[in-house]
Structures are given as C-alpha cells and as structure tokens.
Image (tube, one colour):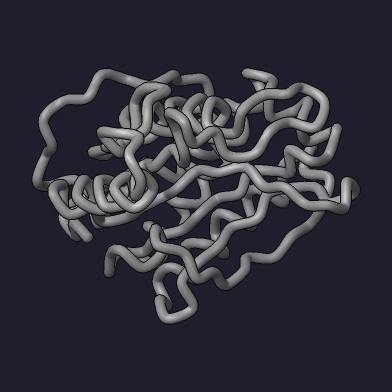
Length: 229
C-alpha cells in the first residue's frame, strides 16, 4: 500500500465519505497511474457470451448490471484521487475467441491486468442467484487464507448492510474463487444482491440504486484503507 498517500489523505477521504461528495460520479476517463497513489482494480464480472445470471422479473443480464455498477465505482475512486483500473470496460468479454476454454482465457486476462498494474486492491462485482426467492441483499466473499481480504470484506459488508434498501443483514463469507486467489493483495467478490429476488432485481436495475450501491462499496474500501494505513 502507498503509505505516503494514506498518511496524508485518510482524514480527507473519511470527511468526503461523511459528506457524500463522491456519490454521484460516473466513470471517469482512465489516466496514467500515479505511483504515489494506491491502485484499485474494479472487475466487472462476466461479459460477452457469458451473461451470468438473469433477473427473475426484469430478464436483465448480470453482466450488464455488473458493468454499470463497476463504472460508477471506478468514477468514485477516481474522483477521490485513487488510481483505478477496470478489467472490463465494455459489454464484451476478455476471452478473445469463443472457442472452447474461453472462460479460462477470460479469467487469465483479468489476472494479467491485475498483475500489470500492481493492484493494491481488487473488487470484483457480481450479482447473486438462489433457488429460494426470499434470499436478498449483498454478500461479500473473501479468500479464507487472506487476513487483509477478510478485513476488506468486513468493511464493505458493513456498508452494504447499512443501506436502507438492504433487505437483509448478511455476513461476509469465505469463498474458493479464482478472483480471490489470483493476487496477494486484498481481493473481494461483491455479490450485490439476488437477481432471483423480485425486490433486489428491481433495485439492481435502477440507476440511482446502482450509484448508491457503488458508493457503499467505495466507503467500505476507504474505511479498510484508513485502518490498514
């Protein structure tokens, strides 16, 4: 982590959080990385022929919702002065060709982006699905072998649970997923809600909620950095 940045600006960022200054920013244009600033990778899950799960009422593809929330999240990090890199910036996947093995190629491409920018943190955005339609709310997954990942997950989960629309008070969960194990930096998967639940489905397709949810993730990440610094 870039200590010179954290030592001087943690209080400023916390003040910005309390005032909600960055809640409405959309994704900003990518600029050259500043070596004195932490680099956050925001990973919009799925893409291209891999649509993920589908909204029970809306019929919306998870991949499109992931991208929308990720763009808002990138904008908030960028506005706060962080370096922020998105693995996927369009509706396309990262696999290059749809030949067999495309999912593995897609995952490896995401890992390469994380390595190339020497990410200090990775946040992968997804949507959940459950056969029980009553399941609601966001859930954050972490690598059980990563103390920093678990701490980051706890900070983000706290902010998700505080959202008025949360619908449930969930706990961060251990996960055995590629995106949690492909880097030594703190990495989490944020399952923003259940597209199998009609209420969550409606919320996750609403732009104002997408912005608010991205802001909750942003606040949790900054809270983690303030403690880690």
